[in-house]
Image 1: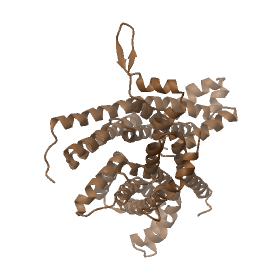
Image 2: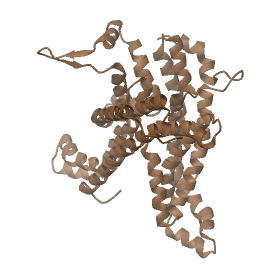
Image 3: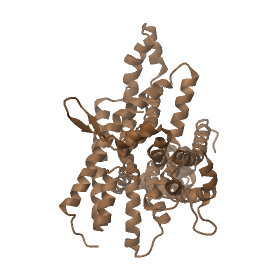
Image 4: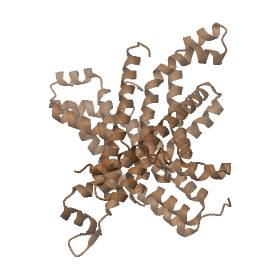
Length: 243
Length: 229
């Protein structure tokens, strides 16, 4: 194996893949956090049908592979949609804006990847948030109620701030998983970092260099998130010491 | 929904061309899962013990190496083993084997920290008791500490195996004919009922993973109640 460096053009493919990976992570992280929070709150609901539905959805999402889920959203979902909607999804290339401008409409691969990754990750985020809420001692709720707070105020001012601190580290761990799992979207044709490295490898046969650059870039993202986790831990310590 | 496509391809999805050709489908997924589970368990145990027992400098190096395997996507690691193992050994390595290698490395890296934590959770008194009986450090580990620590670790082992079963689907990217790959193949051939194909395949994984998940919960409850295994 000769160690020739990659040519500029091929490096550019990798950089574009890296940017796509960052974009996916930047979009999926807030969406999954929002959905996960809603699911965790639904777990507190009084009515059992809502709790059971959300619980079943979380179990389904967690106990089947992300790859199969992505295939389902990418191949399966359009087949279940009405003909007209399917046509529209496949043809609309631009999102018209007022004034004659148009935004490029993301490809269906990208949309399916976002949907699949967001739902899968939300199931994990929900469990972390639920664990965070369980970690708040019951006496805290009772004390807040005794002060005359309403249930929503108890949640907003007493439970949520503490639960968030407990859940912060595991949540950042999930954000790392989101970044790593975004690599699976290559299987449905999203041109992110793994896709680009595979493409460069196929064209140049420079296996070591292609996968090496991609690997270093992934480690870089994870390292940044790792540092973020340390900063958050120091800045917002869990009340009552480390659990 | 029309599940005729599943009935037509059921045998193929469950076992590939076996016994007339190579094993594939759900059977290969099971084989991959069991193989990587055993290997990752052994690797995790070895690394965890090394983390717990080694000198600080070695521990730092080990932690860094383990951190590396935890930081990169499993898919990337599969690429590495798939393309580099044949070059490194100069022989033709079957795809199944390189995927098993990658999955064992990842699983081992994740389990190492659970094993270390399990060993650390056993009180110093147990170590002192073993040593004062004249046992060596490793004999104490083997006969006194590990039997207790393993009980504490068992749920995290089973949890790791759940992710392992799911991760076997990544063998798809290097063309190993396990369940996900055959599903994609059946889908590409028939074209008409993709939702049914992937729902069915997802259901197979779900049954496998849920069974393991249930086991992990039962084990965790037994460990908490102190009844032992």
